[in-house]
Length: 493
Image 1 (cartoon, rainbow, N blue to C red):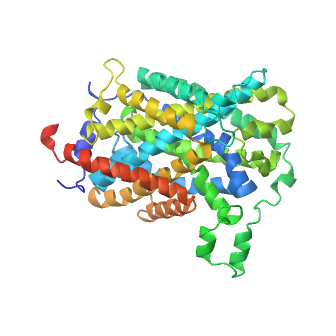
Image 2 (image 1 turned 180 degrees about the vertical axis):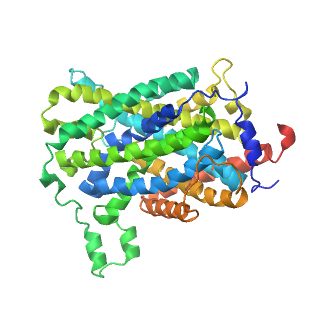
Image 3 (image 1 turned 90 degrees about the horizontal axis):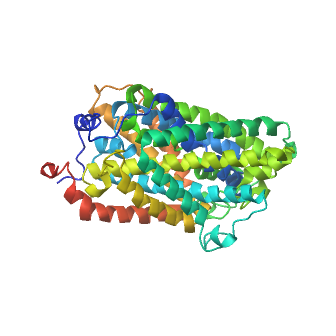
């Protein structure tokens, strides 16, 4: 049994057929764009922008978003090509299975589980903080003991609101994709509206002093340029990533996970009405819309308040907006942000369950995970499992640690998808493609390089946690997945 055996394109396309056993095709191109926007605009904008500004890039966090968006653009083109030619649930996992073989597919699928599950947990933690701020406007405070995990900067016992929202959204997803998409569309409208209002009202209150210096000084970079420190020593020191150009790089890596909306769109390919046309529109359309909003939003946020005041602040938007004097809009702003966070978690949880569904269909995980609800045709058992798994991280792990773990997993997935496009052009040059990446292999190679550079800018602890997660995944693959793979054991199907 070969661990490098690829899954034929014909088999993948056959699985994508809309029969009684498959997922329902209910999503239009407009819904796919909304799914992407729903996943992209969230914690990366409303929480991590402030954290990345305070800890890494200062006002130049705007440049961090531009750098991250450039990397996303090249990866997004590759995702669009794959999604238009392989309209199957599973995203990068499925694409890797068709191009680089079963073992690589397993690695990327296992990585995506980390990406989506911890992405949802990250947002849930910030969601709970905004809920507390909203309730505080009316004189009610959630007790700190049930609002913070034991390892937060302000420790408590458990983040109970974060757990409850994960439970509620998981149960909604079991009801069906169409119902979930309808709620997501409503939440996205609210979210985009508040972003535009924040930019429009806040622009007139920008204080130029808050943007000076735009790129805060990094003392290590000064030592490096003068020859008093080697690059290796600088890279391994506390100076790296703490302002300056290295801070912009690390800031890009920190906020990168907020761009995985188009990745989540690709997981829903098997539920798209017209995937050949709808998937490229959903993937690239959501990326373009959100990049513009991100850059403008970050510029206004750091212009309203000094970036140092965002340190440890999980809800920097309300902190900055207070400078505008439009305090009567604070409650409406907070409600819209809460709604926006809700849509992010909804898309993340959906994407994760679709990856597990695909891995189970292929025999790499027990059939338990691909069992569909008799009425709703949703992978409800997977939804229930991750309802518990994600809520544990949301309830106990600090938001900054979660964000770094998600970013490195996302970048790893993007790099493999870029490589996959080059491979597929060689192995299946005549396959029908609703969208084609221009200038192959140049564009995919640029995408890989940018992803690797951003990964290098993340803290070493992120690499260590990724390595531990991957080791666990490799053990599971060789103990279960390899032996039960349908591709290597066709008689088991």
